[in-house]
Amino acid sequence: MENKILEIKENATREIEAVHCLKELDEIKNKYLSRSSELNNLKKGLKDIEPAMRPRIGSLTNEVYKEIEALIKDKNEKFYFEELNKKLISEKIDPTLDGTYMKKGKVHPLTATVNEIVEIFEHLGFSLIENQYSPEVEVEKYNFDLLNTPKEHPARDVQDTYYALNAKHVVLRSQTSGAQVHTMENQKPPIKIIAPGRVYRNESVSARKNNLFHQIEGLCVDKNIRFTDLKGTLNEFIRLYFGSSRPTRFRNSFFPFTEPSAEVDVQCIMCKGKGCATCSGTGWLEILGCGMVDPNVLEGVGIDSSVYSGFAFGMGVERLTMLKYAIDDIRLFFNNDERFLKQF
Image: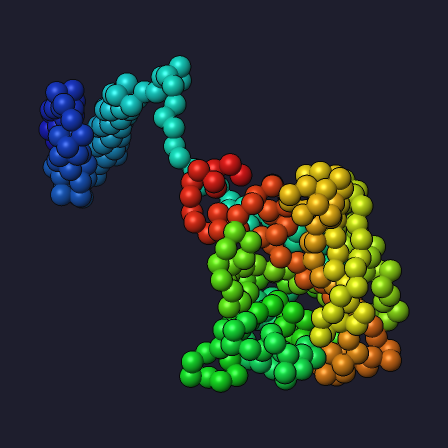
């Protein structure tokens, strides 16, 4: 039996040295080390030999098994590194070669402006509201009624607002101001929110107007909120957005949901107040509308206007982007012209 074991060792060693690939090596492994191998059968037959010989034969069998196993492992590693070296040679990279240009997308200028404005107001303590408080498909109650808009107001006319064909009181929102009402209905003061979104108006498309555009609504409601708080907040926003302090003016205006109301102008970026074609010779550019929240709006959502007050503002994203980057046609934002978009 001892000679048989040594013969198995000799045959296995010779065959392992002669293999040329991993498949052949696996076949040899099954032949000599599997449970049905001749060597394993000899182990099982130890019970049939003389007791005095069992320790020696058993030890020899285990020793040969381990030697064959080690030879197979070494051969396997040799094949592995040979394959690895071939792969490294065939797939090597020359770092001195010029790279291949890969075209990358960019953030749309309107998206970049929204992100910048939201970030500024978040630094000023405002919170970005959830989408559920700012739906694009709205009912008149939130787009007009609770915003103190009279029934005869021209904004309600089909020439200004898109109405659903089969739902009389459903509209595509014409302003983000409805987010004020949704928020005040679901949150108790103090409230300090910012709400960006798309809005729709029945407008003729031109260089200055589009029937789809973007607004950002802001609202602050708390005790003892004054118009000076509104002015301070917007002046700081203008300083941060345009990169430096610049003259502003608040002009009297009218919005159904704010009283008093104002429009905010900033000194013309092009001519610095001297007068040019961009500002129609006035030296000023309108950038947003604002005002103190009308008490009727507060009472309409269950907030006591004798205890709380607030301010609101709304700005057009396209207009602010056009002013900052001297863009003269709003349609450029929607044409997907790479020659325009790649400049940002």
